[in-house]
Image 1 (cartoon, helix red, strand yellow):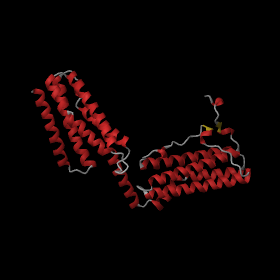
Image 2 (cartoon, helix red, strand yellow):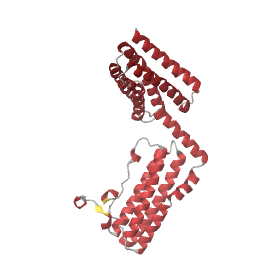
Image 3 (cartoon, helix red, strand yellow):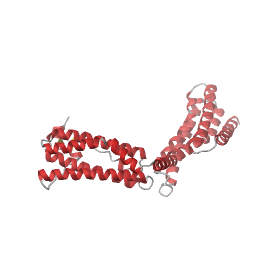
Image 4 (cartoon, one colour):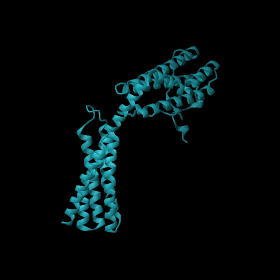
Length: 325
């Protein structure tokens, strides 16, 4: 809308030399990004790191071909022009700067990079005037269009079935350490520890509005406490459990959710209906915790159910008895 006031160039106004310079800088950036991914993944996922190293080498090959064409046509001085200097050119999201990045997210970002490069070369080939340059850009567009076949070829070379299985297992374990364990601990704390104060208040006052206020305070307070505790007690560097803020977020959010599950029924004005629904929600929460323990922590379901349901039932009974007392 305000392109006339912008310092960015429009793509259609670029000269052949500037288009080649833009392609050169883009290939250089992509190679650096792939090597950044490789460095980040080398320890936990060595096979995928080797794949990204190979992709970076192919980008280097593209860059050398572009530089050769530029020298033949325009000499040694390559203009400094990058993606951010061109209006409408899709910029790369700096996801490679994140401390932790899921393996599937890295692979998806790589595919999007290849797809964007193909689109750029197809557009560039239509704008240049020199036949040899147009042919080179068309060849590079075709090379990027074959990214799926290229990735498959490189994957067959670097990602064997054994390596892929090992990396998938590593990713699964990291997901459990970073998200499932803190979230499960929070859900257990929120679902169980809030039972006594909530139901003690409910049976002592028999007032749904007052009970909900106490339940809301207990749930939010427990969530904040658990979130900060999880984030502060381990920075994840030595334990490998992942970023503290992720674990704190998982623990705090699930703690609050666990408490709110049996707090929300007290929005119902009728005490008997609200309490009956709250008790039903409690047992649903406890069985859900047992299922999560069995699914992700490989705890035998009957043992998990006995521990969680029995413990939760005792806390619930204690809250009711205290409330009647």
